[in-house]
Image (cartoon, rainbow, N blue to C red):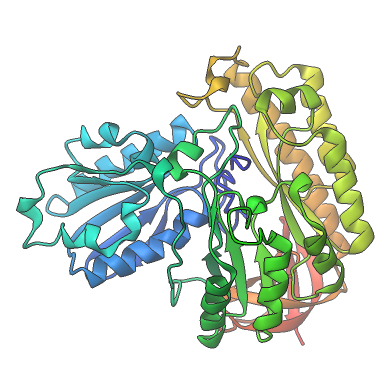
Length: 455
């Protein structure tokens, strides 16, 4: 999969986003909320957060009660360790609850979770989005479901169904899935075996969902998926991501802000480039599925770009839209990475002015080719990750300081906290309604955060 990451971006989903990436390369779990004693605990990418809302809705509609549903991530061994740890803790704190595990971890290695005494049921990535899966687990049917594992062959799935998510608990922005799966086989990534092959949601269904979200009051929508750069290749006429975004913006004129999750720079089509140049509603923030800035490392990762591709891409976007900002996913200490190879990646961060970095030390994932390559010492991986983060913070602080005195429309996330169109974090001078947009003047910056006064 191209995007290790949205969460880590590591799933593409991945702007990979409001939560922070930990040092070990996994995002902390996000609770989708409780509905009639149903709690969803999402790990990993933005796509999992989106799907967590569908799970919550379907489980409630099916009549499931007193259940904890763990929507797992399998991007690294550490990600799965954190899921198992959370499950054990949850069982101690909720001895009577039903514990269900789903997500990429459950899809790739269901037996691992079925063998845990704390777990009652394991459901695959396709099954987790179907209400009938939860009907089988209601109080009346619970004792009748003798099979602990309900996991289909994900590679047999040919379509990505459109699921209407009417609201997102505690969020100012909404996420809309436009694609799922991945046709690529990066040597560090196991996610294609958890998500299946690439498949796209038809444009009409995307437009209908976004229109509905706008009608309920959302001002910002994020298009998410596993590999959204591959959008449309499996649809009639093979529409591109750019043509889909153009149609969406034309048909939903009341949508104020559209964001796209991380992309492969070499896969960006002309339509998308034209939109960035001419459509102010498409936010000027690009998150690149980079992973490394050295050609040999990129080759060993089986990435589709080289170092110069990224340099050229950033220069082209800045030519089309001078205020654009860039983020990136980067793996530190990939197997065989030498000091010189690492310096090439570090220098690329500085040369291209990447400001939002999702950096994580390489973590071997069983079943991937990279896990069999000569490994870099863990202490070196950690030290390289720290240096990359430091370079990103320097770039970010310079950018934030350049914004002082600028007038900007802020999307309020909660209370006094919001984001600029460039995804810069902002603290406002007073509280506002979550999800609203307010015009502000940027008055200062410290601790990687802007401060603003509402006009």
